[in-house]
Length: 452
Image 1: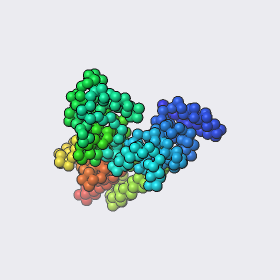
Image 2: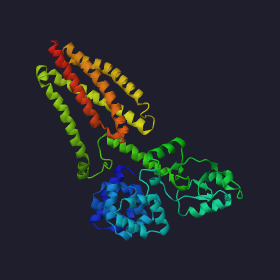
Image 3: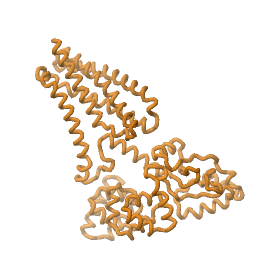
Image 4: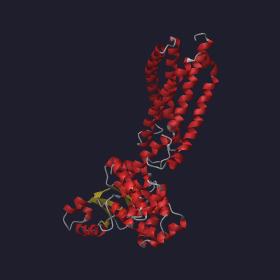
């Protein structure tokens, strides 16, 4: 759905809401995908979104809840009764149901668990014990597993029976008498085998597995490395407890990418382009205040050299070049380093080489861009000595940018924080302070030596 079409739908729905024409809204929504409806709801005012959500049937409502962010999901859930919520949760797969129930108040969560199917409730409760960002928290209990002594004919019958309840069956998991995973069989291989063949004879032994406590980022890397459609999840005793499907991993990858991207930009991870102005202001303002504090620190450095600037006003013209180039260089470095940490390419063992390399890159870039900047200063009417001063300050600040841009994420990683938190706000503050101090400090020294 294009943005123009979505906006047209929103305006049409708003008009129908004012006319209280619920049948027309229901008819309009029936032709849309759950993802498109979810995006529309996040672009609407909360009251409008709630009014539209209440018109959805339980099956569609369950799908739409998974397409909206946490803020909107809480608002939508709080707008319906416990009985309606039970119907909605009943339509979800166990992993999605666990995600929704984990966000509910304890009493309401218990009420929903008591209201859904007993077996489903048991499976959901098993998933609730795992942290949300682990393999256990991302897995679903729905899967097809058979004993290793089963025949192909019996296995196919099991797939047919389970297919009514399970989506995206790509393979069958083969277990022993203790429910330990011993192999997997792809559906195409299963179909081509003879009906009386033992399933253990066509199973792929020693399948790739993941433990329940593995971080979701590591799970995503396993899917990416081995091009998997699904991944079995086992407990500490190698017993099969669930599976993770590729559609869940795509969500994880998107979540991790945008989470890092937002953090580096100093944004709340729940911010969206169509958020109402009030919500956008609430999410962005805290980081802007932090930015204001760091800018004030940079300004305090400039104030120390106020006398130097008063004696040579051209310095005030050239200062932004030093700080701006350093900030851009540091942002380049931090982006590469954070990506390396996220993909597992960079760790604390090989960090020393990266620090040396980024400092060397900063030095080389500083020498080249500093030379051009010095020439530009001369063309603007500055004395050659001022051009030399600018060259030296830029070279020094580019080295600072390389060191700070690579060192800050590594320090955060060392202290078990998300490296992406080392956003451009903090890095830019360092390069601003470093650039101003170097440029104005050298200028002051040059003046005392009578060179300026």
